[in-house]
Image (cartoon, rainbow, N blue to C red; front, side):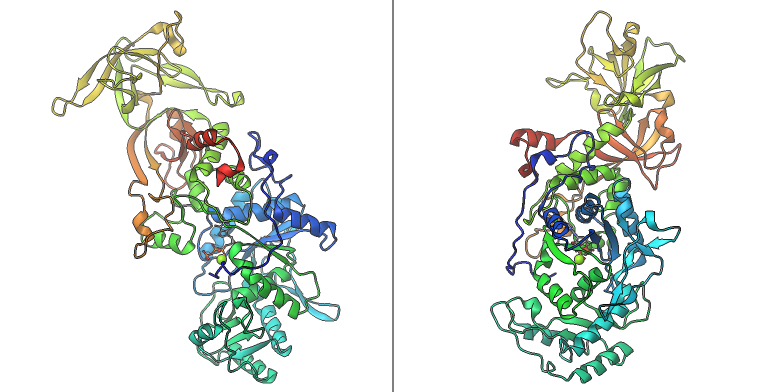
Length: 636
Ligand code: ATP
Ligand code: MG
């Protein structure tokens, strides 16, 4: 990664999001329409000045890993801008590095992007016809390569696919030849170590390559032979001829092409020279007609090189404008794909889509709605200052979304049998209960009640501690939507002394949970009828890492050591109300008093459900916010 500490002049001023732009309870993630930030300001100016007539942004991941919550920020930003200004956002595989990339990643990236923008910005998704390559045209007497986006709505039946930087290897090669012909690039025979050495440092001048003044003819010949495969890896490079004394070291005759005899997931064995990111990126943007190339801050120091390439080639159409914003960092989370890959490869998680992973696929499997992720990204906004966002804020948006959309259900995770002695054997009543107190339209359902029910072990104490108001001997509580019951005694395991069963009586006059005499009980607990319960596996998740900043480990320590040993707890023999038995994989519920849960997309089967806890009910963020007074600073 380039060094982002080299200071560069920049006129873009960060603008805090205006307070009225905060997500509203009705439509989180549906904002964007009136968003304002320094990037949108630039887009507006470019439209107003006539520099551009339509907006095309892009999201350009390298297919060397799965997308994560940091990418989600970039997706929401780039698609959000396209959406706001009636433009398009291209999905491009930035696949110039043959050795680390894979079609598995291409597929997962495409799926994840579509999932995240569905119903919000899918009409802005810029793709190209399958197999489509840039068209060569003459513009103003100059050769020009162009591959504009097609949205799904414009496809007219053609199958579409993402853009691939590797589809531009031929145009890029032609551009490289043009640079050589213009005396702006040369073939260099120094080794990689020598090139590094000779580059110097911001405060130390660089040393010119011994091959810098090679004739154009010789460089052309050597570059063509590099392409033809005559030389081994590392033997030669193509370098730009800019300025070895430039204060910005990225302008010190940077390498544009390297030899790599490696097969590529998209181009196979067609190439043995591969363009460097800095050369490929700006030109890929240009070929697709990108108007605004929005990057993370570390690319700010590369911008002069990006612009140099476009200018020296004297490209005939409007040049893309690169601007930078700060990466997203989230507490208890890592974003490095290299590190996430290690977790997968070393079996420390169940895969890229493990519900503890900060990946989009992991969050989806855990039950996070796309709308909640978008609402979170909208709330954090964009700025030019690096910061760390609380994981609790993301969870807050997930909870807020699920609270409105999920039906309630009763599930007992650690069951304790309760026998209601005065309830007739064999009798079953269907108790009516509401599906969502936040949304009457979600209706009611009927839950079977019978003589033996399960309650949570936690909802009973034989010897209650002070202020414990749930069930204990002699105490009356409400079983949600059913009856009031009073504990009359316990049955213990003769060997361990552990309470294995609670005995109770019910008051038949309290059906539905109301007391005709107006007497109060202090607790309402959830329950499941033993005869009707569905046995299930439930997975509880905690943060994957035990420390706030797992990237910040002391010298000599590995981030792996900061993993949270209790990040996953698997509970078996959980007792669910019968309606949950047929839950479709991916279906989400609020389990009363416990949290939000989602039927696992891989492992849950009708009749044998497996649930993931998406998030608990406890909103730590809401409390923090109350304490701090609500404001966008609170997110930082
Ligand atoms: P790597 O970890 O391999 O260096 P990367 O995280 O930069 O790569 P890319 O695949 O290059 O991953 O990212 C695609 C896009 O997502 C880029 O435009 C990048 O700026 C953006 N992006 C990546 N990480 C974050 C993040 N944490 N916050 C915001 N945007 C991000
Ligand atoms: Mg990158």
